[in-house]
Length: 116
Length: 113
Image 1 (cartoon, chains in turn yellow, orange):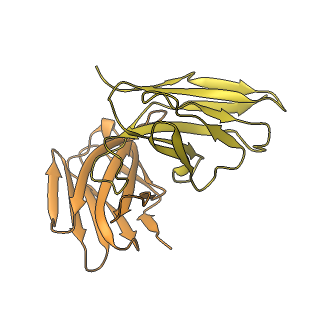
Image 2 (cartoon, chains in turn brown, cyan; image 1 turned 60 degrees about the vertical axis):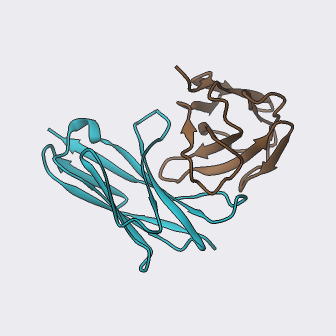
Image 3 (cartoon, rainbow over the protein chains, first blue to last red; image 1 turned 90 degrees about the horizontal axis):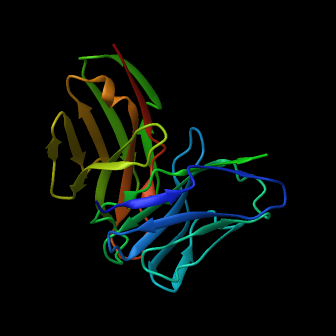
């Protein structure tokens, strides 16, 4: 079955350490997104990509980096510059490059990142 | 600034009862409004989408309404089940291919037996 796979499900980071969250989709979707979700907060956009080898900053990109070398993969690196990384991270994808929402975003089941 | 406000923030109901969740938005120019259901520890799943010309749309026990004049939408759940316990998120999109959809904070629904 087609879908989005995020790994790992749980991740622990030490102070000063970079960690990378994986996101893979086999839906042949053009657009991919990374969101951060904190308790009681809505989803906040970190980065998005509409096409391979191109990506754009979202509302809270500071302390994060991404790459889009392949259509099916959009890994997120949480760098040591992100001082409050504890959160639930969601990856999503959608058909086409039009972000106006005509097609639904398909979400993975998230990675929960915690600080040791 | 585009905003989406949802109410109530949380809701507790008994199994079998009906409930209605609200979404008010200021997104302009309006393209569409989508409701997602997010189970605890999972990613959101789309329930329904409302476009400008649609007033009501049903998906099983879920019925969404849209009033584009007052910029309000509601999600009505009929004969609630324990599996309806989740967060319900309203997402509004503006016209134009480069505008990122605006997410509400969600309503947390708990259905008790």
